[in-house]
Amino acid sequence: MPVVLIDAHAHVFAKVSGEFPRQVTDTTPADREATAEQLLERMAATGVEKANLIQIGGQGVEHHRYLLRCLRTYPEHFRGIGLIADHQHPEEQMDRLAGDGGIIGFRLFDIGGPRDPLASMDVRTFETYPVWRHAAEKDYVIWLYPQAAENHCVPFMLQAFPEMTVVYNHLAFCPGDGTFGRDEAGRPQIDLPIPPQTRYNTMGLHQYPNVCVMLSGQYAFSKEAYPYKDLSQWHENLLRTFQADHLMWGTDSPWIVQDPGYDELVRVIDAQLPESKAQDRALIMGGTAQARLFSR
Image (tube, rainbow, N blue to C red; front, side):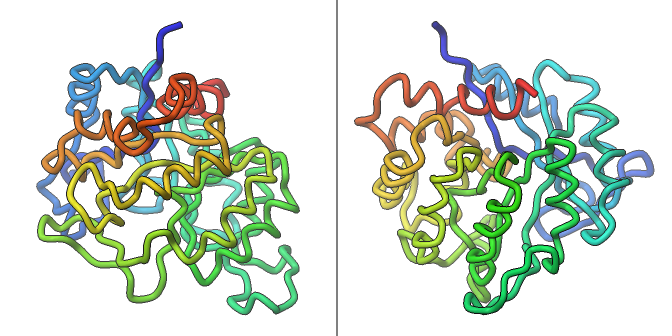
């Protein structure tokens, strides 16, 4: 059976315009674009059939216009993950974005629980609890990139909502205060030890059947050039602990287009997991994303 390649974590955005408003940063200036058509061209050249597009450029409904346009235009190729402006009252925005078609989940960078791991853990008091509750009710995916200081709160949310699909972003690394920077190209560069210190919290989450990990963002965490061999042992640990049917591959395009190149990212799992079984690589490279994201 042929392997379906799915890039489960990529970004697209248009130049700032009245039609497609978005927030501007140093890495996404007003005149920069990373269009769906450019991504599709790179996908076609490397045999990638589908991609999951992660919202960038703002949390408001209006900031999602370009993402929604891409999802409506290319429904056979794309699914999407949105952002939420108001975590306390998220229901209307979540349903509005998902109802427009193609958005299957929402990204969170915060949990909003106690930073003291010995504090009382009543998830109903967590700032993002309304998001998790509504996602569970509507079967939306939680796309999770939590701060290290809040990672201990995640198991309590999973215990409350065990049926919900939760995808840890970027190798399950959790940034901490003062760890986020930029490399010479302006790309995210996260200064964390390898393996991450939060692994003792994260690895135990394999017991939850709907927790997955995204194998992406290697360029931001590695201390080496492509193929980022200093991350190989961590990839092996994730595979051994979570198993291939809970792992997904993503490029984090467009940040990797120039260095090392989209085509190299298509081969990064082969470089990171050279001894893995063919059926495991097939799951990581697309099978898991097809089952967890595209088959909804």
